[in-house]
Image 1 (cartoon, rainbow, N blue to C red):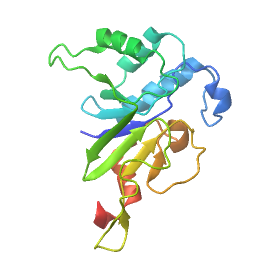
Image 2: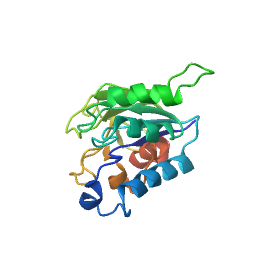
Image 3: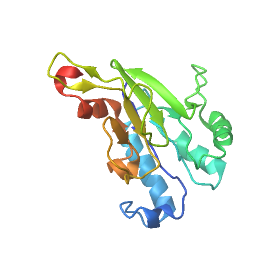
Image 4: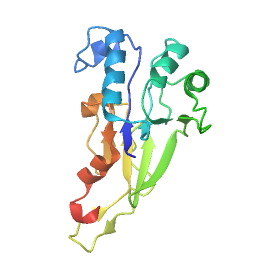
Length: 196
C-alpha cells in the first residue's frame, strides 16, 4: 500500500485552464479525463490518497462524485475553499462506489487541519499553507549529522506560487507537475537517507 497526496484538482473548473497554463488540455472534459487517467496509472485500489482541498469547482455534485468514483484507492479529503458541497459529493460517491464486500467506505471527509503520523514523522495537512504548525518549531538536533528534524506541513491552494518555507510543501498538481505524489518521496526530499 502506498500513500499519495495531491491538491487542487479543480474538476470541471472552466477557468482553471486559463489561470494555470501548465495544464495542457483543450477542454474541461479532456482535463477531467486526463486527471482520472494519470491517477489510475499510478494508484491501485490498495492505496490511500489524501486530497488537500479543491476537489472540484462548483458544477454538478453528481458529476464530481462520478469522476471520483472512477479513481483507484481510498480517498480522504481535507476540504478546501471550493469544496462547498463536499458532503453531497460524499453521499453520491457512497451510492456509486461503496464496497459491498467489506462494507468499507472508500471516501472520507477529514477535518480542515489533519495530522498523520507516518514513518516516525508528523505530517500536518491543510488546504492552506501555514507559517507555523503543530511541531514546526520543535526541531530536534539529530545525532547523525546535525540536520534538524521537524514536522512536515503539506498544503495546496497556492498552485505553486508561494514563498518557500522549511518543511512545508505545496502538493497541488500545478505545483508538482503531476496528479499524485508519493508521501515517501516527500519525506525523502526533506531528510537525508540516514534520518528517514
